[in-house]
Image (cartoon, rainbow, N blue to C red; front, side, top):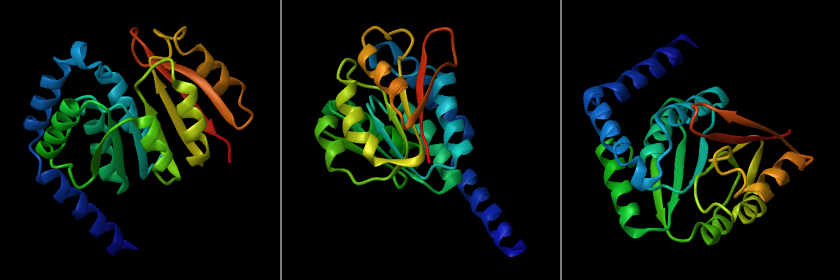
Length: 204
């Protein structure tokens, strides 16, 4: 047991050594400067997603709405600690290209896969189960994602929908559905004063 723990510690040290913390912060700051154009989540929300991965031990994570890869980077870094992987979907070719470049810069390309295309079609082709699903795209068509992804969410898994406070009226049908779903426990959570998540836990 002690040898195993030592090996894991050394592995974690290797992961940290290969990436310059200053370079990480520099890129994150740059991407935060584009938030208005790319609709990236605020830093506190991105940190929360990373914490959620750590708290749940998630290993298979799906993101709908990559943009330029800001939240994917936070989740990818968190997944290094759980040994998991992220699949993220972006419909815009230019944004997908940017996201791949940023993921590669962060040395996360072996852990984060950026898929390009219509997520409504792609999620139906992907195999579950997923431990965590983060949706940050296409408000107003959320029920379609719920229908496609709920069966692929692992028991004990979490479905996180962003913009659930500021744009609650736009996604009212989705919020009503997850709150009333007999197999989901749902709370609305704000990490900042700006907006927040609808977090839905799939009962075991």
